[in-house]
Length: 273
Image 1 (cartoon, rainbow, N blue to C red):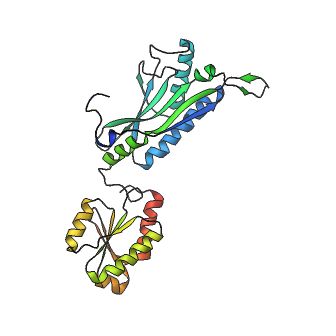
Image 2 (cartoon, one colour; image 1 turned 180 degrees about the vertical axis):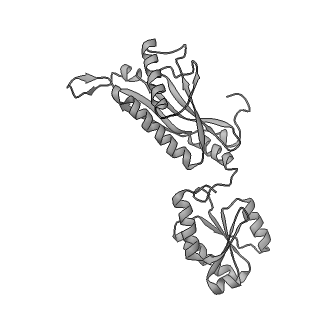
Image 3 (cartoon, rainbow, N blue to C red; image 1 turned 90 degrees about the vertical axis):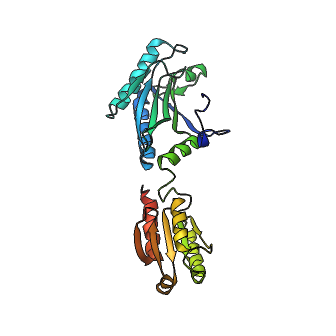
């Protein structure tokens, strides 16, 4: 990369890639490509990310015949066109062993990041002399796709961090709930709430600092914690929690059971808010 092109979470010492190789027969190619695109749709929609598709064609430095490249490029075109998806041609930017579909994710600021890719490869199975026995009892050469959904997982974390501006939805947030006792008298009750939420599988912290409640709320909001539970004497008496969202919306008092159900539904549906 050019100097300065990567920074922060995008400049890492190493990275992990969710790379997979899928083997298929020639008559399965279109179905497998479409199945992979549907996987991309499912994953990206969870994060509220949209994408554009580039079809990268034969580079100057390649292996395989021109006829084979053109046939594979047509298979990629037909597969996504049949799904009603548009694409643009990225001339000469294919892998040396085959054409590919690159998926460019758009974040909340309109910037695009190339993450997913489907690379069609009929060359490496040939070079490794891979074979399978077909229904006709004869040996045949399979086709392979290289498939990546997220790309570099570390880089994808950087993309969604900037996409959400750190305000992750509740199901994704490192800390989902912050319990804020108003006075020292409510400290034990706050700990019990935290213990109950933790036992239910939620990520929760308690702010026991000797600070005014306004400051605790303000700092939890700046930390972009999705839910804040303010607990004071009245909450202790009624066994309730006063629920506040980082948006500033006050949901009022409710029982701990009601709040757990609210949070559980957010997590179950992977709500983005």
